[in-house]
Image (cartoon, rainbow, N blue to C red; front, side, top):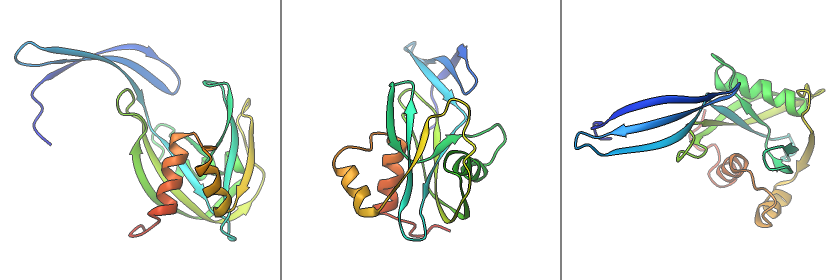
Length: 181
């Protein structure tokens, strides 16, 4: 990476419980300025829960932003000061009822870096034990267990439209845990 040759001016436009919107202006020494609105987010996790028989626990989750139910992986926002692996353990249990003996890091990625600084931490959860979920009030979530063949068919048919789930599933299916600990 090259050394930064501009100054940033940041103005907070809106603060919400899970994110903040800023107007960011880049000022270059030659007088050029570029302004963008940016969503600041503390980060989130997505989990690939793999049962002992190889099936993956996805969820059907109603998303108010698009007024649709999506088939996706369990996920959630980091709490302030919470390590991503702890968020993954908490969210897995809250959304699916499963607890994991092993939570293995899979990959990290940015959701939509053109407008959003949210960093996603993906994990693979194994050694699962079923228990009751602890879903937040208003969450409309149902577990949906899929075999890898069914998952591949859902992907091919465009039935998984959530970017974090697509990223984590495709990485898990086609790259795997090579070199991960």
